Length: 250
Image (tube, rainbow, N blue to C red):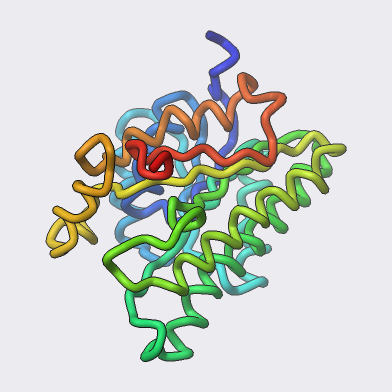
């Protein structure tokens, strides 16, 4: 079972203040990793950091906009200087805007692509440089079942396109960086219950479309992410793991 250990590893989690990022940050920390939370939500990060620090876990917080190249590079430099290295990146920051394609504002399209696609690349690039130098590292990008199929009933062409792009970023970086000992994989969560969707009128439809008949919980993603971050996945790169209650099996 030591293969699955991430004890002593140094991890970055973007979008770490809430939702999936918060859950994975807790999982990493309680599995023995030191964690750096990266988000624009300072209060959310500080609240989580306080909770984890009370458990004796090393946590740092960095306010950074993942679409700003200079802030991203400064973030990576800060984590490397503070922790001494970067072993794991959970590249998770993202947004969703539901607008019908024919009426969608270009500003909405651009914001989705900038955060979900450009942000994923910029963070992977900055952290990847550290890992390439060290000849070791694991990057896990958050894609989505929306990368595999157009979801319904909500209109979300921008989100779907951005997450499909995350899959190809993942595969491309995996191929380029394999010679340097850097593994790059992704997860594709299905419908995960969160504060953002708890009051959605689509909840029943999403449950009905999912073979398991329910939405997932963020904690149900942790096992796959820890596997991909650990030495148990030493021969796994360029892979996407769907965690979706059977949605993409239909």
